[in-house]
Figure 1 (cartoon, rainbow, N blue to C red):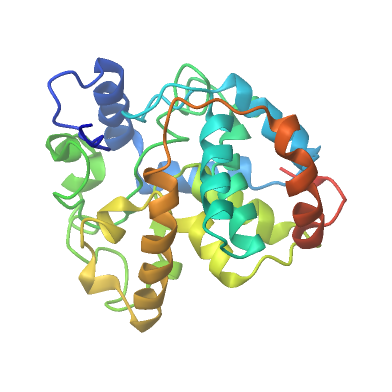
Figure 2 (cartoon, one colour; figure 1 turned 180 degrees about the vertical axis):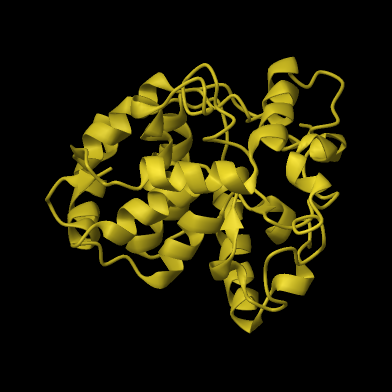
Length: 270
């Protein structure tokens, strides 16, 4: 049987919607936009339980994903079950289960800022650093020139507004579900997930770095350790995608005690 190829953005049958998504994302995700989204979304004013949030992803199909067109909750369970099958630690299983949960921002999102079901360019897709030059390792690099920051001499150099070797913890990434969930969990007082889990959540969509090898001027020694973690997690994020459909209720008895162990039982503030 022919092995499935994932993330083939050059395939002749690539969806028009996928390409248009990345055009809008590259054009609109400027440094100013990212700062605006931080101010808008990082208020942590909407309490919602973990499983309620999970169920909302039954209503969302990630338009940026060229590999699968199932509701996003299926990808989360597929990832978690593969990590579980390999006997990896329980915290990593939970990380697989929740890593895309930041996409629930569509509940308070809008078409205007790309965080709705119809317009997802501010929510999903490969992220990049804003405030410095966009690398050719971005998906559809022909769209890089559409970003007005690339006409600004402060922002269009390899280091841009950042210090050389500052590390990826100290840059602003394009806004999306990774950073949103990371900040939500960072604010959640009973979160005891290890640092490794938080790194996996925050940087799993940062493909120009972890798969493209870009941004060497900005990296520091700590990022080398991060890269190993993301490469490990990426096996389960990418290569577990299939058309197999799960029911959350069928796996809840297994994952609920793990979730309570690391996240507690109180609602999470989104």
